[in-house]
Length: 212
Image (tube, rainbow, N blue to C red; front, side):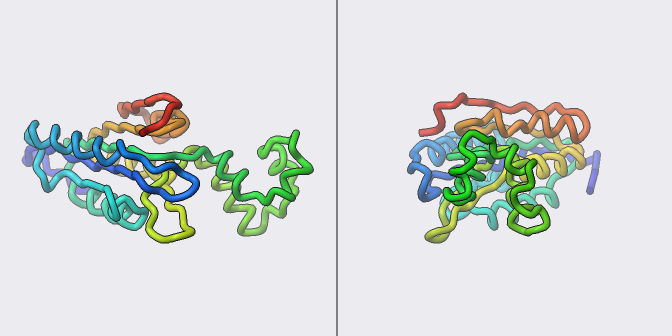
């Protein structure tokens, strides 16, 4: 990673607003508006337009966000600061798992937790599907992005965000994170960053009411 101490530090922002994630998520009004307000506020405080990534509309997709993650990591310099914001719907890993396991498989085990089912090895852990669901279970919270095609739900995990933040911190970039969604505390970005090696990252939990 580049580190030129002779270059003045800069402020960057990556603002993600997902309003239309498709079924089963409700259509939202607030995220796009929040992103616009944050953008206006940052520009008024002297942040360069080129240093603000507005990830709304078709840009609030996995492909575009992954592309912006890479571009941002290549652009930042040590001593820079970055605001990472997400607003939209979310789904907890355990809810996602229950949606993936067929009802006829779940019904005989209504009184048994999903965790108990996996620990009992009811499914062959060597199968790709079992490994995938095991990965989902450990990923915590999933953030919904904008629908790109019918029948496909686009999600990004809290672990994905944490990996991006870790890469920024490895480049000596100070990071502030806001997550405006239901179950925001379950993203546990601060906890994940502490495991990565100490944390000055702060996160904002807006409670369980969810965005509008």
